[in-house]
Image (cartoon, rainbow over all chains, first blue to last red; front, side, top):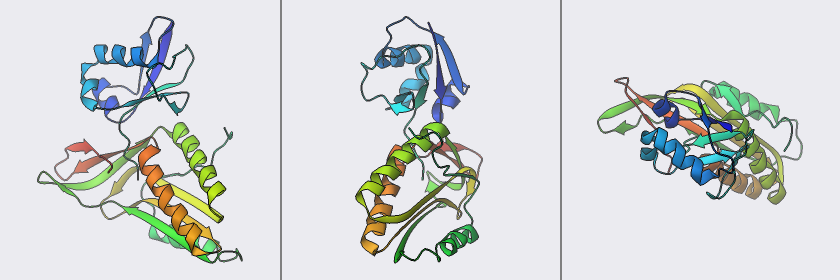
Length: 81
Length: 146
């Protein structure tokens, strides 16, 4: 299946884009997604702790499944305010 | 999730006159005895010999508005607030300008004070908003909240 992930903050800089579209295996979870992203874009590893948001909620653990059509986002450490 | 959560974002800095006008807006609300206001100002920070000139704010807006709605509901359920308004800048805000305005109102001061403080902390910890610090020499780095 294909998934789209929105990029924010420093991740936009590293990947030179506001979003990425990736072909992935079905049954993917958040942990798999992070590994895949870091494989394709090793600079992402330097961000330290980033979160993945699935349908506008922070994914609290790596087991959380990712399905086609989910709204995904890579959330680097936030710095609002 | 509420279909149209309240928009908190404004383009550019929050002007002092705007803050005054929002205070004036509440004069007619007879149950308000106290306002608590937090203003976040861009500090002309010196970092490794470079001076911050401005911060460029970006956000995952749809998620930020939903998160803000959750924070708002949580705060209203625990504090006796008459009113709550939050404004956050997007885009360029220069050193000395205001980028965050949190405004709580209650009958008695304890609720407004406690709520305002909690909202500021939660915004800074949870909202998907990012500040890119731009230095006088045109280099930049991504802000880190404490």
